[in-house]
Image (cartoon, rainbow, N blue to C red):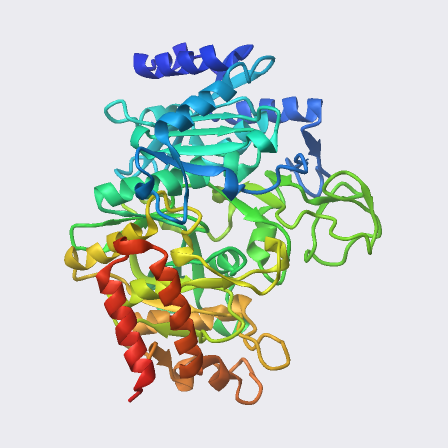
Amino acid sequence: MIHGPENYGIERPLLEWVAAVAKTTKPDGIAWCDGSDEEFQSLIKLMTADGTLIKLNQEKYPNCYLHRSNPNDVARTEEATFICTKNREDVGPTNNWMSSDEGEAKLLKLLDGCMIGRTMYVIPYLLGPVGSPYSQVGIELTDSCYVAANMEIMTKVGKVALEHIKDGEFMKGIHSTGQLDPNKRYICHFPDKKLIMSLNSNYGGNALLSKKCHSLRIASVMARDQGWLAEHMLIIGIEDPDGTVTYVTGAFPSTSGKTNLAMLKPPEYMKDWKVWAVSDDIAWMHLDSEGRFRAINPESGFFAVSPNTNIRTNPRIMETVMKNTIFTNVALAMDGTPWWEGMGDHPRKLWDWQGRVWTAGKGSAAHPNSRFTTSTNQYPFLSREYTNPNGVPITAIIFGGRRSDLVPLVYESFSWEHGVLMGAMLKVETTAAAGGEVGVLRYDPMAMKPFCGYHIADYFRHWLSFRSKSENLPKIFQINAFRMGRDGRFLWPGYGHNLVVLKWIVDRCRGRAEAVETPIGYVPTPESLNLNEMNLPGNTIEELLHVNNAAWMDELESSWRFFKTLGEQFPNILWQELSKLTERLRNPS
């Protein structure tokens, strides 16, 4: 049930802020959300009545619905995303900047009267486990019923959030769909004011302000100032046959297999191993009293890409989305079930993501960035430690990107500083799903380039600072499951077989796996990998682990050029690490 503020005993500053925003936006009514099942169903009922949602086949997909976006509003709009501070130098060359005064004035002008004829939903949300000292509270004000429903899946909404407010502090978020005018679309972040303002978009990454806006762009600034890390990372627990669980985090740019790795199903030949998900997308990491990173998942749901998700690539999430899920911009089969490219055999006739009749040969039926929103709690292999208020202890950090050549299947850094350099050099090849030319390499340091809320060179410096704070930092690795042979086919089968790679990482952390020292890091010996059941052809494993010194020298030249664009703030320690790597490649032992 949607309550009024009198049901909460809310403090005056929050009430005054809500009233001030309402005075500007002029909604017809204000509804305070409590996050109950009854309230969620009332939101669903409103949206099915006005056509915002389409009810799916309730026998096959109980409590599942389809949403179709405006075609001009189907993805994050990085060109309309700004970090608003007093000084341009604060945000660096990888962010769009707007002065905080200009940004607030511009957005308030555009927000004037934007909610006339609509309801303003007040959404108190909690990011992180209940009772955790690391959890944070935000309040999103929105005129979108779709946003309200998705926020109730992705976060903990209602009284539980308000009870976690400390010293009257909370993240303020103002969102309106406006007229969905792309020329007046803005997603503005004000780190100094703990304020987010978003207008003229209803897409999740732009409109669910808890998502990338709060949990990464603003949180990364808070993490820098308070001495922790807010990262675009999965968190998983890898349980060996003896029952020992090793927790790792992993940063992977878009299209690099992060969600599939987070929900990995062990292959039959490793059925005695288990992989437990803690997070598929975001990790907040704090040092504990022993100097070990502990990580929490601030979110309560999955907001993941649908295309190419199927029973082979990710059987566990396919099971999860069969109920209580909102699908966005997927195709619709004649029997009322969702469909997308890569899901399996397509029905003879579909409605595409825009509601048009589609048949084979007419292009994509689902949008390449189509999504599903579903609760983390219904995932069948969720870690028991998911709700641990202290987080899980992190033993390894993994960087990974889609690379068809150069980067070996897996290797380990020589040191924390070398590992930070590995993350800073991270690149990914574009795919058709990302738009533009296919196969182009783009830099995405630590998979945070679109999400770091301040100068990324200072972000590297913040990572490096942990060496002086702890002797128990995680080992750092890089993996690449996308290396191709001369025939253009993937050398590594990937998916569940990636557990072989994870096992080697665990074994290295436990001091029980062999490796060869190469100029770029420690690379596995073929014998140290569990390959007996894989039947890889010929010299495949040797090719997967090969380090091409000449090609790596070219990579370093590219990295030098990229790092130069970051200016004088780029840390000297990383210049030194880059020089050491260059010397090792020139003069291998």
